[in-house]
Image 1 (tube, rainbow, N blue to C red):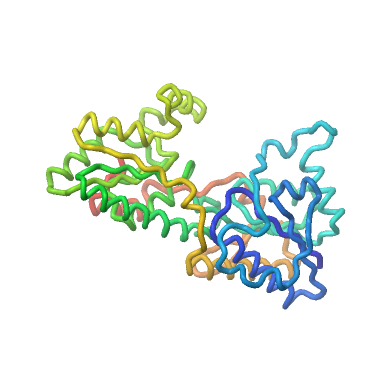
Image 2 (cartoon, rainbow, N blue to C red):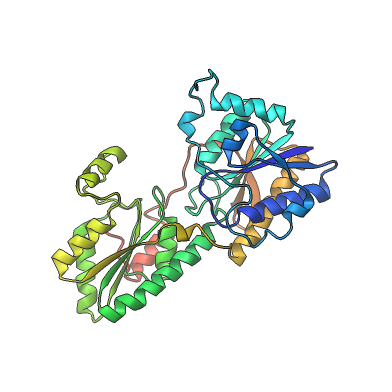
Length: 356
């Protein structure tokens, strides 16, 4: 069996650990296994690039962050658009899949990667997806690899900001990644003891946030910590489409709501405010112990699926089990935070302001 592996979309911790598990499983359990790595995500497949990967290539990468294959973002909407040579990117990928003589292709990526993987399946390619994203927003799986490491990183960052905030009596806003889904902000905010947590799924009322800040100072708290997802929206912005919100924010010289919120809180409460954007440190670094174990389970299971000839699926976590879902059932869907969920209620029950 000839196997191809690619990593697509934004990098995160655990990619190398998953690849390691796939490779070691295949060379130990699949007869006549041959593995090639495809560089630069779908970009490498479009160009027809690949390189052999021996068992030795998978040794020593369990603890490594990033991806040894490299990655890129290839917009889904461009996959079926005709290029200057008359062929679409999808047609090129299908042709190169056949030229490489692949029997199976593992695609490690997030929601966009899964959408493209489903297209490849419809074109007759044998694909198995693996759920990678720090956003934890892939439909049909309880958790994605890379999420727990990012929660650890964001939590530590917020906790470090707290000591500065307390020393100066400030209200500090910490912007966390998460454009559509607020899982990372929610978990890191709770773990770091944030006073307010603002996520895309719950449009927030700025008056409620200012009220929470004032009440905390009146209660004798030395500071306020507000965890803000990059995709958080004001309730007044909620009716607008994404492009319309972007236009409004651009008129204020902003791309996210965080700096605007810091300014308004300062004006209305008199608090000294600062905003911090965590950015790419949430993606980088080595995987946590949890993510290394999870990645190993996911990769090994994916190898087993290939051995059994189960294609057109993506690996998933359900409770304590590793399982799989059909790619066509997952593609184009997102797993978002339910505003009425137990974890949101738990946060609000202990006094965390969710902006409503």
